[in-house]
Image (cartoon, rainbow, N blue to C red):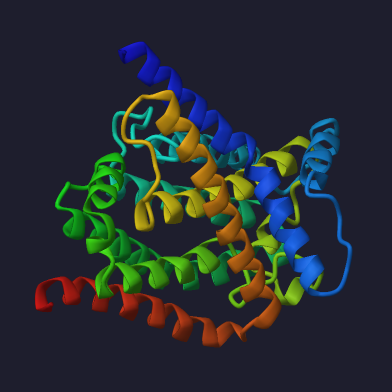
Length: 314
């Protein structure tokens, strides 16, 4: 049974990594359909990554060895996060699936990207790095408080697998102001952390308005492919966390074929719903002005704080 559990946990981590470009393609497809366009195929991100991986990387003579090592740090942090995230089964491959460790791995990814933007020797890279650090001041507390609310609500500690199992076992009794407010805060954090509208426009070509993309301007070839893939993995992991932690009903808590198949179907529906909601938000809203983004992040932090307070009041 131990080897079967390890195999299932390994497979779910591999699947989470493998579907990352697909989820990015699905979000883009939904957005195109809502805007009256046909749009590219949902498999287009795979083709783009294949093309980039075949190309050599070109680096500026002003960049250092840190610039060339950043893509590997970003990829490694996302791979570890994939092994820590319950997706189809509540068990996780990494033995330290702690929520605090998850937050700090996201922070390490952001720090590496900021450092890569600065080390590229580009003016726009430094501009994007400074904007990213400005927003991260409010992203991290909101994220930590939102998932800490789940730890208190479930009473299962800070292990993500235990939290998912506990909230799933509570059933509909877990649905309340705390879970709804924390989920709304996490959704706003998902948009900010992944540089989506209204915080940033991932498809923009205007260097002066870029945040996330500005830090990638100096990357090319295989390095750019790894940075793009790690960004897609980050979005997919956030979507999986939203489905398995805040709305975990249907996730497999035991190793049976029936439970795993049912969980896979339910999780696929959840991921599609989150992708649809993300595309609706990006189609309805427009990019906010840079100096108004802290106000939106303050709302996210306030929601997570209200969620935590409601656990002790209600």
